[in-house]
Length: 91
Image (cartoon, rainbow, N blue to C red; front, side, top):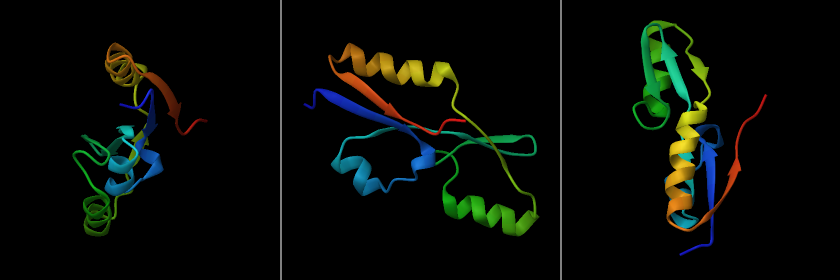
């Protein structure tokens, strides 16, 4: 087991192969289409996102993961005895 676990948000758009190879944990952003909210890369992949834009002409809005979203992930990793390094989009 690695001593340090890398965590990022879904803006990194890393391939499943990279995520698996380096055991990277992703905390998804939220994508909103009108009243519908999806977890990026979990409930809505890139193909589905672009298809929805093409079909509706509506541009989605995004929202960062909440502090609680990160806290849940960090707590689990720390409870397993690993340290965390988090590399994310910032404003």
